[in-house]
Image (cartoon, rainbow, N blue to C red; front, top):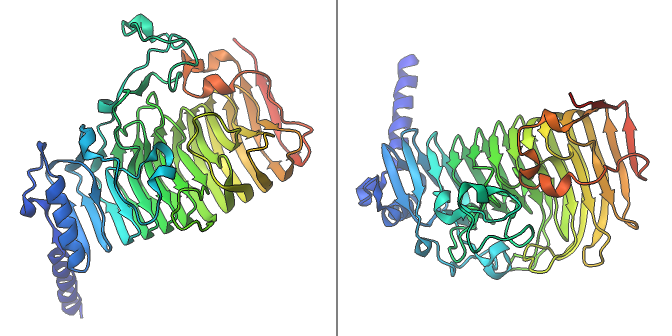
Length: 456
C-alpha cells in the first residue's frame, strides 16, 4: 500500500513539474540588467496554452515591464528570485486596453501595472521571492517648505510652501512628467485569485495591489513593504469584490494599508456591483494614512465584512470611515450613494497612532451622496493614540447602531511619539482640533474606558 502511494505521489510530482515553465527557456537572462519582459510573457502564454501550470522564476533577478497573467497560470517566484520592475516609463504604456475597466475613469487614468490579470480565472502569484517595483526611480525629495527637508540641501527654486506641493507631508513626491505604474499588481474582473507568500517591495508611488470586481480572492502570508515616506503607496486596495480573505499579512504603507471600497464608475458595462464578505485577520499594519480605510466618495455598497486580530502601529490613523467632499481635480469618485453596513472590528491592538484610533469623516456636501452608515461594531480594541475616537458627521447625515463595546482608549501626550511625528503623512491633516465622539446620535459606548496619560 505504501509503495503504491509513493508511486502515485511521484507521478503527481512529475505531472506538476511537467507543467512548470521557465522563462529562461524563452530567452530570459535573469541578470537584473537585460529586460526579460518578452520571455516572461512568452512563458505565461505557453503555460496557458498548455492548460495552465506555473511560470517559475528562480535563481536570479528578472527585469521586466508589464506582463499579463492568463487563465490557469501561477507566476511563482522562488525565494532566490526577484521580479524587478523597469525604471522606464515606456515599459508602462498609457494606452493598455482592458476588457473590464474604462482606463479614463480610473485613478490616474490608466490600467497600467507591473503584473496585470484582466478578466481571468484561476490565477496566482506565489512563492517566497520578491516583486521589487523600483519605486525610488519615480520619486524625488519633496521641496515643500513645511516639511523641513530644505535643511538637507534639496530646497531650490521650486520649493513651495505648504499646500502647493503634491502630497506635501510625505518626504518624497512623484517626479513631474514621469509616470510609472499607478498600480503595481492589478486583478480586474477575475475569479479565484491566490496571492501567497510573496513579498512586494518599493512600490512606485502607487497602489501595491488593486483588486477590483473580483470573486474568491485569497491573500495569505503576503508582505507589502513600502517606504511610508513615499506618497500614495496603498498596500491592498480592494474594490467592488466579493468573498475575499486577507490573513497573516504584514503591510507597511505610505498611504492606506488596506482599503475596502465599492467604486463602480470605472467599469465598462455600467453594472453596479457590491463589495461584501471580506475578512481581514491576523495582520500587522503600519501606514502614514489609515491602517484600514472603508469607503470614499459616492462609493456604493460595502457590507458584511470582519476585521479581527490586527496589530496596528506607527500609523496616522487606525480605522478610517470616509465620505469626503469633492475637491477640484479629483478623478477617484463613484456614481452612487454610499452604504456601509454590517461591519465588525474586533480584537485589535493599536499603538503610536498619530491622530485617532477610529475616525469617521462624513461630509454634508451635496455632491457626496450617502444612503446610510449602520450596524458597525467595534469591540475589544486597545488603543494608544494622540486622540480619542474622532467621529465627525455633518448635520443631516446620521449614523445608525454604531457600537463601541469593551474598548480601552488611551490618549497620549506628544512625548509618547517619535520625533517629527506630526509630519508623518496624513497625521498633519488629522491631529488638529479636539475630537468629537460622545453624545453623537446613533453611537453607543458600552463598557469602554477613556484614559489620559499626562506629559512627562
